[in-house]
Image 1 (cartoon, rainbow, N blue to C red):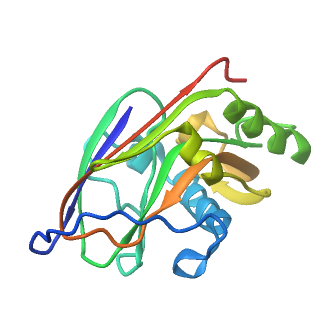
Image 2 (cartoon, helix red, strand yellow):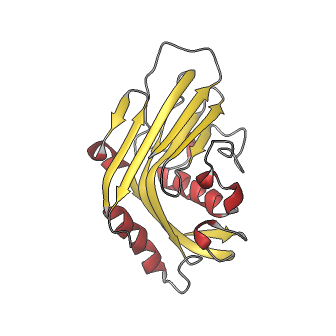
Length: 202
């Protein structure tokens, strides 16, 4: 389970409606797939000791991100349970990785592009429980099915001490999973809970 507590830095509003962008829309000028690739490229190019995915408190939520971006990327953890707290300025949307998988040549040397495309699909096909809760609004597996995306192949540069023990250098990668993008949340405190269970991952 992954819990993120987000503080929107303006006086509390009484309106607490969470709106999600439609899967076929272009939130903040990019498609969902383009946002997913952007998030993964940032995560995979960051050393593990600075990675938002390995962050246990929320202090690295914005590492490497554009402070003027209209969207905050809230990456999942790499397994287990995590609770993070962060402050987000008013008027900013949230990209939320509910649960996903990525495979790359850096992790699987010698893999073909076809294999890299197939592995994350196989992983996510084994998801038995996908759940998102934003404040009092719950989204179950059925609700989130339309927010499952598969990316085309993309390029990434792994650093030294990379995530998943990947070898440093250039790599092809592909991802699959469940992602939502919110419109700006109302000012105040918000709690976001994501959960995914995967049986028999490849």
